[in-house]
Image (tube, rainbow, N blue to C red; front, top):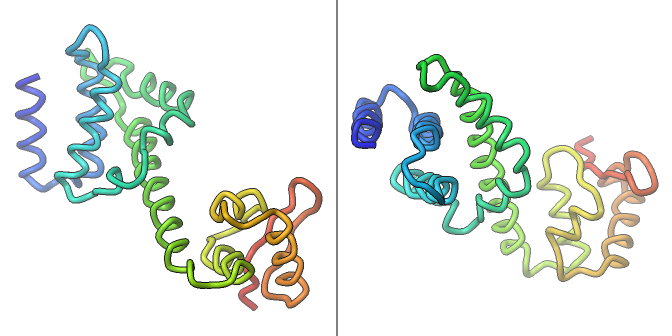
Length: 187
């Protein structure tokens, strides 16, 4: 562990590897060293948060990255397995685990951004808030996702707002039934 921590500090201060890439590599190495009889996974997630904080990425204070990992547990273990294969021979591939962890950080920042925009739109009417959620969504969004972002707005209010926005041409309706999605009409 001393050698691993020393190599991490040296690589971090060297500045040749971005901390967002270096931190997941360190976490993978920590998990492969497996320094404790129990709790290595929990400790690795705490270390990830600490190292991200030290590098200036504080999203973990506001958004549970643990929740994103829990919700994608199968992918987590798959990437961990892929990246730890041949680790003891120093022939492993860090890319699957690093990509997965970068995806978790990105998802946490997207969730944080979504929550901040919800606060920023708090003074708007409920239909206007639905409008703003769709307008600030890249790609498509479902009614369920809108309701998740605006838990205080009833389903019927969301449905009415969607119908009005489609009728006015501000948004486009894609598909039908349970699989209906909406997107902002930039035309």
